[in-house]
Length: 133
Image 1 (cartoon, rainbow, N blue to C red):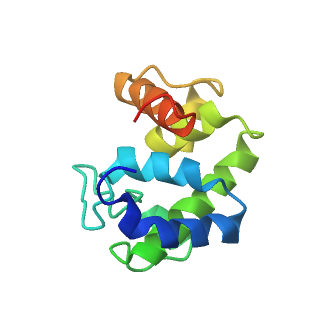
Image 2: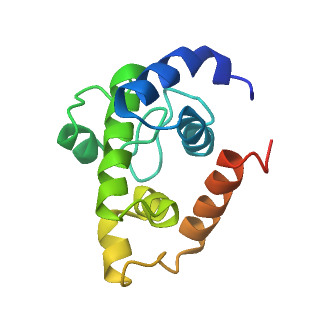
């Protein structure tokens, strides 16, 4: 596991079990989103381990996205919602997590043609499948 992963592994395992999500997927997302930095803040205003936008955090019950447990629960609840919205399609789910579900919908339920989103989907997928270390 990368540096920092072991610190958050118990919480990631807990939240994965609560939501019925593979912990390896959460690890891949957290690694790409924040490199396990629970104080991370993006230029777009996303916060914490899973880089959750505050409006999305509120939508899924979080009021302190720098709290690792709230962040993981909100980000994972959003992933579960996206899983249902995109019929279990991991690629679309990850694209929507990165670019927003509206962007995926605007492009006919396809990965938007944004290089950042395409690279994000590829990197998370490879990490999740164990193709990157």
